[in-house]
Length: 388
Image 1 (cartoon, rainbow, N blue to C red):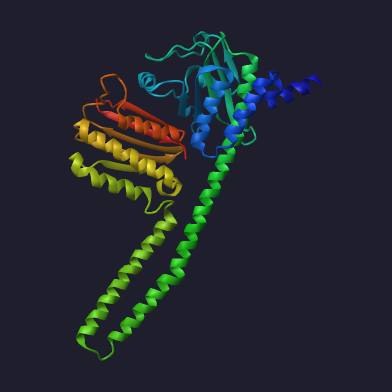
Image 2 (tube, rainbow, N blue to C red):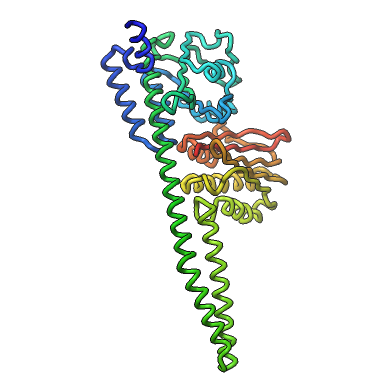
């Protein structure tokens, strides 16, 4: 019986928490993440509530890439903007973080850097000693979706067994909430697809057929012995009707092929053309993945706002002769803007300007990240990634 009880406690981690106050706080945290069905807000809630629950100074959530070999997203709490910028690119899953990917079991360390798998910290990274990492699983625990990382236990040298149980319990609830969010998103997508199909069918079966019939009527009228001017006017009407039919057919194609009106591809290309005179050059634009089918309207709005800000910054500060825009949709959405200009310039206090800060805020509100780096030639690379 003892072995069975131990296995039961493993799958129900809160059974290992004895403190009634901590159990109450755990319940509050679980209710908060369950109440948020938007994935962007959900991810930040998970990290914030976990850090508060176990008394960690820093928290992070890493989302695995499609091949489950590294981290595709990395969301942090506890770091200010200057610290984030000083650290540089987000971790991709090496060292101890990689250990949780290859061996997805809870890990608790008193000295993070003393672990044989420790990869060390980059320059500018704040010191971190105590460490607690737990996997986040979805699909009834059969698939590891990501990992929750907590560091720097406040008021003690290391995290306790009870802290580990609390983090595991929160990760378990988070996995359920993430899967629920996925289901909500799928339902919304299916609803949009059904609406598009219904509208497209309605246009095809009623509007186009009626216009086509009107065109036939007018063509017949031309053959009647009427004034030459009337015949000319009727011919113009027929031409107009043909143009309307072409426009409606184009609309049907867009409704069938794009999840947002007009399609995100067209909007991105239009924005690049619009800003070309200001930039002095026309950006090179490339797409990968189902850009028009999988990107929800709210995310598309953020993409266009971030792209406008990126290109505007380049026109003001970069002195670039070449700008490349890449939009990829796969395991999330990634917008990358690179230029061959003079490189990124921060304000005199080392902090980001308002534009860069806004782009970072937009990414983090959607549960993503925003990185600013340099290209091999000394220009600037802006990377904006969000889950979809």
